[in-house]
Image 1 (cartoon, rainbow, N blue to C red):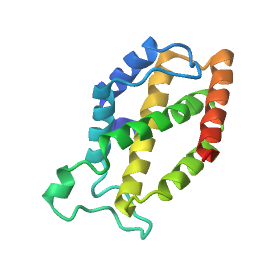
Image 2: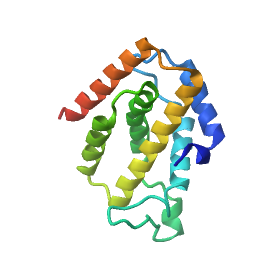
Image 3: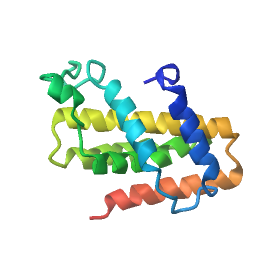
Length: 164
């Protein structure tokens, strides 16, 4: 999803939430449930007919019930949103994030998700990271102190994925 198709209210909500957070401490407060639900709804709106499966085909629901049913449980959606936060920060601070993302998706693929669910996790992760980095960019430039904390956060998140 590109910046233009992201709902402006979602970006504003993230900007407000970012302004209230401490400057990138190792433990960040949880996102409000309403914000997570908004991200999930936006991801689901942009999922069917747009996300691509490993076969190259776009994801299609089997029926209207599947189209309107959450693709993954909300508790897992919240976990994906939280996992994407360090990447949004890394993009803002121009810190390498790809190894973390690849490890995260590899960990998700090792779980009993369907291919549609894996595709949704990728869409939700991407939407969150992009929305988060845009909100941070609106807040201002990444300071050297914030960059140092982001490097630490991404490293810690990658290390946590490697632990059993």
